[in-house]
Each structure stands twice: as structure tokens, then as C-alpha cells.
Image (cartoon, rainbow, N blue to C red):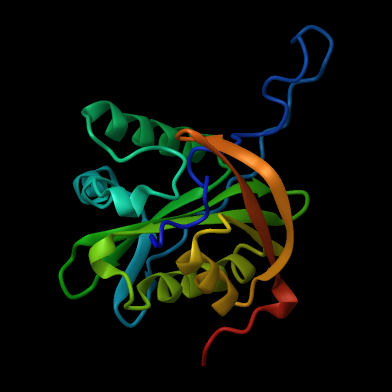
Length: 218
């Protein structure tokens, strides 16, 4: 099964609270969240985990052109320029709103981007955020996503000062389930018939990881 990450990660981004709450006449304008600071390049043994650049889009498209890779994502396999543009627009809105950071996984050996992960739904007041991820099928089974997420989680609990990270996983996505559990995420519940996408309605498992629980590999 696809290591395609948290089931609805990118499509479900909520760019700021209260954007549609109120009529603009009496309610105070929502206070924009403080953005997550731009992280440095996070170097791992095999990867550079860094912020997305427009030049990465061709490699990101190659990841999303595979049906198995996109199976657990809320949007379909990229077929057209519009699919590519829609993803890019979502990322730009998120970055502008300051509610998340889109990372890519660049292989050090080749310089190619082979996957992506996102920290999004940043809630400044609660010092928490959600993670999502996708990895090209040609690179499954190599431990690359766990390697990348370990670096991201360490940065989130360190320089970003987050208290809690969350992940949602489709119950049928065994690969994604193994990744979050290997990082120490704890399953906290199951929401029944939570999402509808691509012709099916399905449950989701909720996972959480607290800063004091985080134990990166030595």
C-alpha cells in the first residue's frame, strides 16, 4: 500500500481561524497567526529536507503521477497542468497565511526531490500542528520518510517550540501507520466516516505526539 501519508493532509488545510466567521460588520477581524519561522535545510544521512521552491515542481509532479502513490491522498493522480497548479496554489496560500511549511525531500546523492512533507494547521496559542507526507513509490521501503520526519519533528519540538504534533491516517494505509508509530505517535482514537473523497467515505485514525514523549534516534 502507498506510503502516501496522512490521508487528507494537503487538501484539508485550514488557512487561519475565523476566515468565514462573522459578517465583517461587528465581529473583530481575526488575528493572523504568527508564522512558523523558515527552517534551515535539515540534513540527514541521505536527505536534505528543505522548504519547497518553485523549481521543485517538476519532481513533485513526477511523485504525484502514480496511482498507487496518490491512492490515500484526498485528490487524484495528477493528469493535467491544472492538477499541478492547484497543489501549488494551496501551498502558496498556506505559506502566505503563515499556518504551515511545505518541505521537500531532496536526495543528497542525486539532487532529485523524491517526496514531500508538510507541517500545517499550526495553532500558535496551543503550540501544536499537524503533519502530512508523500513519497514517490520508487523509494518505498528504504526508510526515507521516517528519516525525513525525524528531522522535521526534532525541529518542530526544538526551534519552533511546538508542544504537540498530530497526524491522521487512513485505517487501510498500513505503511503510513507504521511510520507514525515508529516515530512514537500514539493512536488516540478513530473518527468514523470522517472524510469523503474520490468516491468513498472512510474513517480516520488520530495520532498524537507530545514534546516530552519525543525520543529521536541517537
